[in-house]
Image (cartoon, rainbow, N blue to C red; front, side, top):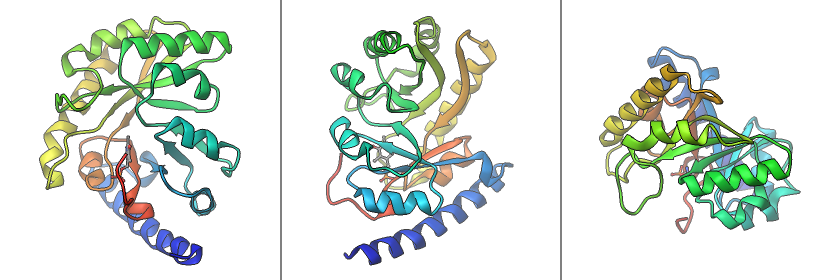
Amino acid sequence: MTEKSLTEAFDKKYKTITQNIAAAAQKAGKSYEDIILLAATKTVDVDIINHAINSGIDYIGENRVQEFLSKYESYAPVHKHFIGHLQTNKVKDIIDKVELIHSVHSYKLALEISKQAVKKNLTANILLEVNIGNESSKSGFLYQEVEDMVQKIAQLEGIKIKGLMAIPPICENAQQNRPYFAKMKKLFIDIAAKKIDNSSMDILSMGMSDDYEVAISEGANMVRIGSSLFGRRNYNI
Ligand SMILES: *Cc1c(COP(=O)(O)O)cnc(C)c1O
């Protein structure tokens, strides 16, 4: 596709998504402004990303450290998040370049984030990734260990826990993920009620192209959307 047709395709999809988010938010007793739309920009060219930013996208999330770094200097001003699987040895490359890491999936990774944050004299904002479907193919903390992990990780220097993130199992019908989203919301509320020092349950990051409306109806306040904004990728990451 030419760049013009890509940007036109984006404009149309963006409009639809914002309408759908507004409708889903309203049904959940919220408004559009209560939901943060994060554009998942893996494999998307920076020109298209910048068109999206100029059209109103305020948050982007990248999945791969190398790809993120190669685009980093070229993004228009935007909130930059890391949403992909993060290897311990790559933490130092992104820690001062992202506002939020969604995908903290192990204590070991949290330790390294703490170490690098202290070294750079900054506070790293993180979400704990929950393996809500208990899938062996996915990383993330198990449901039953999340609260203990919040307690433990919140004590690390240079880290602030801002909430939780999840990717439920792949399914044919988005409604099938409703129970997983509901479980996440319950966990989020239960942990918030504990008022654990150095943590705040502000962000519940869940819902992607195929299920963001269901996620919002179950309490997501940040949705990560890629293909429904930018078109189907021809490969999966
Ligand atoms: C790619 C990706 C998304 C967006 O997925 P789509 O189905 O394309 O909307 C969201 N979250 C993460 C972690 C991703 O890797």
